[in-house]
Structure formats: structure tokens, C-alpha cells
Length: 483
Image (cartoon, rainbow, N blue to C red):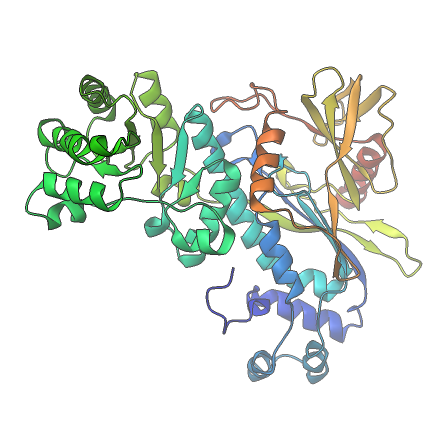
């Protein structure tokens, strides 16, 4: 999604990607084939898993990579780029290969979400945009799923546009929230562009505009008689808000034989007020009237409200979802993992750090997920070298990537390769699923996770282990680089 058509997103890159690209060109390395992995190190909110999102926007970006004359003129004005490099940029496009996990897939730390195989300049220049789009949407999809799981099957709507950090964050955040489980959004443009159902009723200003609250409610019901939702806390929720709503329902909807309606609360003690509201509505014969709540909600507040017996049918969740306020950064990184020699042989590369968590898993890899053959539940994820295959008819020994002594055996499992081809030689080879397909796939995949992995607090650790071959390559490289 590009809100300003005059901006070329190819230029949305860190400046050092351009200085490195110029350096590669001047060093004769522009055609050197490289492999980069995009992965993350930590699940937000100390959760058990994250959700991949943003691939569709990454694809759109890759397909539109180019430098215009205005871009080249700007780069020339900086006075540090060679003229031959600037001429090279005139015909620049992506010619490499990309593999990725489909949107909606549960993902775990240290496994590749996306892998790029491309000439050095191409692979380097796409880093920033790939990170920002996958980081942002994966963050919001993950947060939305936590909120939706806390709601225990009740409807959750994304209400955060006015609190989002920019227009793209609002539009694409609502898209990601839908993937994560939200039923709809308040953002009209996300509906227009992506088909996420948009909805909304009234603000406090509607009530204030009329001589009385009752007139505001009655007028709204007359204009929108099919399932009107009235905001009942502008003045006094229990003394006037709900009674005026019931009166409007009785005088406008009941004579027409209409029974679908709702009220919304945006302030106050939600547990107390919704219990009282439910009783008042039921006593008045409006058992069909739903109760919606909003106002700075998140998964923990929703969980507590329901534990306290709050009578809520639908949640509108805004700022704490669209900004992922509790942990607003998804720490995806983009690292070189291999290069090809002149003979085409893949040469593994590793980044070493005194911080063990920052040591990378080298090489061009495959990513498998193992499912129990008897119950379909996810057991573990498995990284191996690109030329290895998994025989799931035999027991398999797998190795902890961070410890030389930890290993275990998996048995009675079915293996599924998670990463699928997206681009081949610069051409899109992937069928983009519809957004409803992505949302349904996401829910189906989350259902394969054990409940222990889905706990909010102290979730069970889901392991991403290495093949023996990859484990040995990693530790041989570590010894080579550190001794």
C-alpha cells in the first residue's frame, strides 16, 4: 500500500544499502550471488509464537523495484556514487529468487520467514522494505490474535486508525489485524482496498448534536433500523443511556418486527455496567440486544473482564492493538547466510557474537514443521541444509542450535516444508491467496499448536532445531571464526 503515488519505494532504504551497492559495483561484485535470511529473535509480549504477515506488500514492492531519473539525479547530487553505478541503476530490477512462509503461518524465533537469493546489490537493497513490512504486519497480526484468543470466540473489531502511527500503519495494521482474527475494522480505506469489513455507528458527538439523548437514539434507529448500535454512556449510562436506548428500540424497531440491535459502552466499570445493562435489556424484552465495549482494551483487560463475569458480546480494540503498545517492535533482522562461489557451490556464512542469541544459523536452508501423525499437532520446527530431505517414515535425531549437547529424537511424525517459492529469476511464481483465505489458513494453523504454546504467561517453548549436518556446519564455522 503506497499512499503517496509520487514516492518511489525503491528509495525507501537505509543509505548504507546504497553505499554498499555502489561499493559492490566498483569492486566487481555486483553479480555475486548471495543468500539472505529474514528472521526474528524474540516473540513479542513473551508469547509462545508469532504470526507471519505482510508478504503481499513485499511482493508488490519487489515487482515495482526501479530507479527513476529523479532518483538518480538525487543520488548524483550526493557526490559519492560512481557514474557507472548510476547508469547501472537505470535498468535495475529484481532478478533473483525468494522463498517465504505464507501469510498467516505461526512462526518462531531464529527460523527464516523469508529467504532471498539474488545478486549482491539486489539482495542488499531490498533489506529495509522487506523488514519494515514484515515486521509491522507480523507484529499487529500477532497482537490481534492474542486479543481475539482472550475474547473466547466473541467478536473483536479493530478500532485503532486514529491512534496509528501514520496512514499506512492504520490501513495495513487493520489488514494484519484481520489476518490475526479480528472480524472487521473501523478503517474505511482498508475495506475499500483490501475487503476487510468496515463498520461503525456513532460517536458521542452524534448524541450531543440533538436536543435530547432520546431524540438522537430515535433518529439513528429510524435512519438505520437494521441492527443499530447506540452509544449509551455520553451522559449517564444506567439512569438515562440504557433507558433511552430501550425506548428508541421499543418505539422504532418493535413496530417493524425488528429485533437486531445493540448498545456500546466506551467508559466506566465495564463489568458492573454490562451486568446491569444485560439485566435491564432482558427485563425490557430485548434479550437479542448485543453489548459492545471499547476504551483502551487489550488481551489482559479482556481476559479479566470475562473472568469477572462481564456481559460483553463484542469488543472494539483500538490503540493497544494498532500500535502493539505493550511491545511495539517486532525484532526481525536480515542477515547474510551464504554466497555462491564461481563454481556455483554454496558457501555458508555466519555472524558471530558474544551474545549467543545473535549468532546466526548459516547456509541456504529448508524449514520443516513436524506434526504428530496421530493428532496433527505441531511438534517442532526443523532447519536443514537445502540439499537435505526429511524421511518422516523413520525416527529422526534433531539438534539444539544453541547447545552442543542437547538433542532429541522425533518419531511418528509427518513433515511439511513451510517455505514456498515466491519469485524465480525475478518472476512471480506464487498465487496470492485472498485475504479471507489467509485468515482461515491462519486459524487452521494456530489450531495445530498445543494449548500450552498458546498460553499468555510462561508459554511452553516450541523448539526450532537443526539437522545434524547443519549443526555440524554451524559449529565448524564457530570454531573457525573464534579460535
